[in-house]
Amino acid sequence: MVADIVSESGDWDWARLCGLLPPRLLDQVETVLPPQSEAGPDVPSWRLEDRRIFAMKSAYNHIFDYGNDDQSITDWKRVWKIQVPQRIRVFLWLALHRRLLTNVERERRHLTALVQCAVCFDSPEDMIHVLRDCMVARNLWSRLLTEAQYATFSQLSGEEWFRVNLFAPNTVTTRKEWPHVFSILCCGSRNPERRGPLLIWKRPAPGWIKVNVDAAVNVLDQRAVVGGVYRDSDGEWIYGFSRNIGRCSVVLAELWAILEALRRAWEKGYRFVVLESDCADAVQMILGNSEVFVGHSLVAVIQSFIRRDWQLSISWIPRDCNKCADRLVALGRGQTAAVVDYATPPIELFELVMEDAMVSV
Image (cartoon, rainbow, N blue to C red; front, top):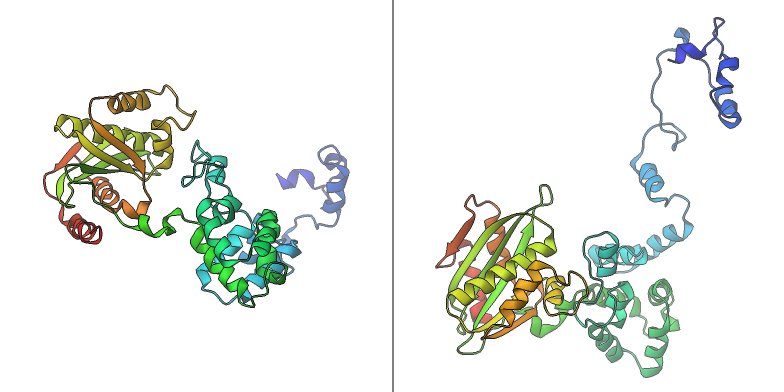
């Protein structure tokens, strides 16, 4: 109790405090008036503001240590002045602070076990790889810059590369509008989905069926739902399913989705099958492009299906090409049954199925 360290005269009991606090804190206590009824009740105050009143700005700056970071303030003011939509400004701000959710960053946060780029499978997917060095981004930048300009452009380090192109573009090119062009293309090139041909679902070849699978895990209780959509070479619905599989990680749920889809395809007698998943981690594990989970039972069983006597192709696709499976799994989150089979598409998917069939022509 505070009263225990106040003397009978109403002063601080220094003999007792000296045995409790280090000298630097004793110096601070000395400037504080001991509690007394005349001083009124104690009230909380916010030490980060001169008026001692709480302010969100000072709290945010203190938590993220931006309050004394002159470079951060300068960068934000410069980014704010670039004449692009607000969402692009926010993207640039995240990129400048290395907060883009690349696979390298996801691995650091324990959200994935793989760091390889999902497009080229050639290098770790960090920020500079996604925005500049991946084959998709590299093809884009090389078309906009001369050979000499691209040489300078591609040799700059990550943060320096951003700041030069945004705030000192003359180092790279004489184009006055370059900061705006650079900003917009960076925001677009962060997604492998920006490659035109991959933006649509594609029909399988005649005589084949295509199975699109997906999985979802509830962040609160880790309960997972998996599902799959089967369509023919005309884009017509053949079959669909969703299943509750209990609690597990996202990657394990994606593997379960693939296993369940293959099992059903085999049991239904299909022998020319294309299976697509938007989970690059799961596809890499199955195809043997990763050392992670080697020997895991799910991977082993899936690989045993691959070795069966049928024509089977498994590949990764962007999420935008997997909308039907994604929507089916979303519907399955509220289902009470363990497994739901769909002989016809549910009403919520009818429009998507028709759209895929028409656009894929």
